[in-house]
Image (cartoon, rainbow, N blue to C red):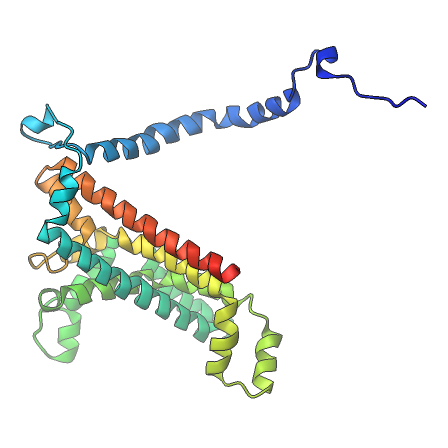
Length: 304
């Protein structure tokens, strides 16, 4: 009995992998213009900024024309700069207070309180919280300035004269950012809680587990991936927050609320030291990458 064999590529004249190559080309050709634009307008500026971080490039003066490669001088100067150290510490406080504690915790609490509520109640609460989220940063900053200013709503209600933006600027910007950004965490946790089996929670209640034990031993373990994903996203978003702080306090008074993005802006576009500002931006990028790796590592550990 003879066994039929397919003709070899050499006999048929078809190059090895011909159909698969054509399939790949058929997918890549429509994406070609988009890939070129991404490389030109995204990868290009990023790579150029990395290079500029190692030069003494400025917007004015001789270095704006004849910039020189200075190696790690910008980074050595950066870590000896007390203003940068101050901005880094304020950024850490802002991220922990605003994202990790504020938005994350408040979003989870709202999602838990809305679980099982009526449609009208959920719609009203979700609408109010999401309205703050979709509000532009400049508008949100104007609202909080009107609320916290010396002649603002808060002092009028309390009957005191207190300049909150001057005496407690970091508290003010953290509070404003929590108010504006909690909606994202609430939506993430609302979606995660909808996937928690109700029969499992009800069985635990029948066995005598109180609300606290059900939350700690059933609900939170089941949504831990959503918790880590939410923490990673809001941490990166808060780490790069600029507009709200700049519009509300301008980094002041002095440098009391000057986080790293504001310090980078000041060095690059107020003092025109593009090379030094790019070095600060690169350090900020590395910090964001480290946060991402930590969260991703925690997710993998939990899945193991």
